[in-house]
Length: 267
Image (cartoon, rainbow, N blue to C red; front, side):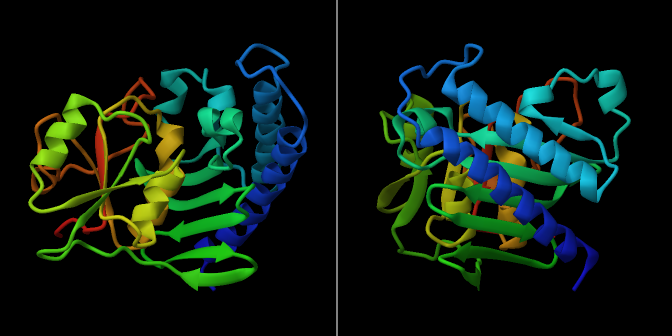
């Protein structure tokens, strides 16, 4: 077992533990859903954050950047070559709606690229793990199985991950540029990327705001499963989106628009 595989097993345990503390709050009968102090959502965020930070500190001395502690100065953060990037609870709307499609995201970033990612959906008890260059797998109902992307083939209906609500004009334009029939596959949080990683969708175009911690863990899963995550500009086709999405390369922690594809980038 490689050193990254050992680390992935440890991080998976940490993600599950964070999921347990989130579930203790999620299962309560709560009615306050905003991000104000002491709301159930904030309580769950912070509880998971504390579990993850303590867990990661117990297995490594690398710096940690989390959505709940994102005020680290760029002058310090820009020096990091290797660090943990964490979203303790990804999927605010899913948490509020209680549809189960929220996740715990933990990624290891090295020189701007995700090397390892763990995505855990506590309600679904689904765990996705990506070790870039080695393997991607899913653990569900206690069973571990290898996952791989399924690139689109000619004449096949396009399966495109998107929002359950009305699509933006930019997304409509993107879909119109694809040849053939299209099927929309709806999902919440970083599970959108995981749908591509496990071969249930071909593309996930994101032409809206996200932060680096929203994508990094699932990005690693996609790469390890044989896909790609690239920067996407409005009006570009999948073939034109060839610049990899990177992390911690600028002061802002917002991602550019991006495309998740079942197709690997050409070397």
